[in-house]
Image 1 (tube, rainbow, N blue to C red):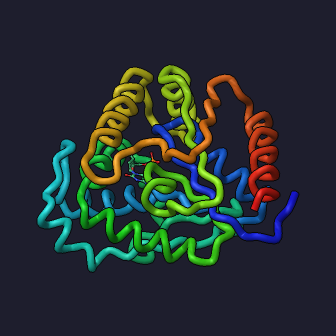
Image 2 (tube, helix red, strand yellow):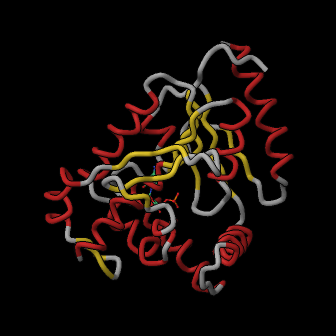
Length: 233
Ligand code: DC
């Protein structure tokens, strides 16, 4: 595999279709940095929840915007897992970010233009030197429109709900399949229909429907794509 050029790889797609598992695996394969942009929106949401600025899917936009200067999001390499963990004002919040309350309120927070501006600025700083895999909803369309490789991931709703459900159980969290499926549907609807940076496939993105693919098959698919693209440049 040609590795001299440190590319930017954008992985966008629907909730729970395995974006982060796939993006982490390719970052490991290429020895690139992996950034979970969803974790950044989740961290802002956690901050807003703790302050009482969002609840029941309704955000107090004014209060969230005025507290943005108080929110510092950074990543730190966890030596045990080998991956970055998210810090909110210096506190590791990796586990809290997956809480139901965060999942239920993150779409409301991530529709706020000022929140997005701040996150996009941070994301661009992180990708400035290339050698990065970033997953999210608007990475190939807004954050890095010139990314060398853009992948748009999808899977059937049933497969996605089942995967998220098992993931929560594995983490020892309480879960119910119908509730999980409803949360995924709600988030997809809000993420795709919001005015600013909606989830949509970039014109030059390659679709990966992994409903029936194993992680190994996805890796074979990616390596072929990477070699083709990087040898073209
Ligand atoms: O990838 P995730 O499910 O952890 O993302 C959580 C939410 O954050 C998602 O419902 C929408 C929002 N998000 C976003 O608006 N833009 C991104 N680039 C990433 C996530």
